[in-house]
Image (cartoon, rainbow, N blue to C red; front, side):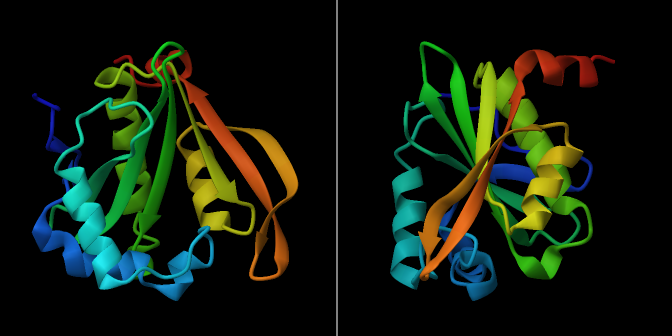
Length: 186
């Protein structure tokens, strides 16, 4: 099945995960700075290996299963992040977006470019009508990125998650295919 990958943008490539991605992914998922905004502790090498192995059997559009894309800096060839696209409802063409980036690459616009390209992929290749993303309200970089690419804040859930004994708020951002199309029509 042709999934339309790799996908090239000016500075990043989005592609499927490979076994060579273990160490760069561990630098992201095993990083306490990244994990503090997730619902799980830092990952181990085994968990990263399991993720990579599980992705080899996933087809684009498998309902309820995250399709994980590696985001690679085209200049250096280094994996800088991962983006998860999940088809949450086939009938309603709903999808979920998630992303994690190595903090060492922040501030260069590469994450914004990567997520922007992933949204285009979700709407054009996966046929998603509406995509949403949940984010820890304390993770300002992430919710500002979503606002920057045109996603709108649809909800603010107060004390939605208990993380390490502290209550954290959660924002939900979303975008419709019809909101994406005018931004990219020529």
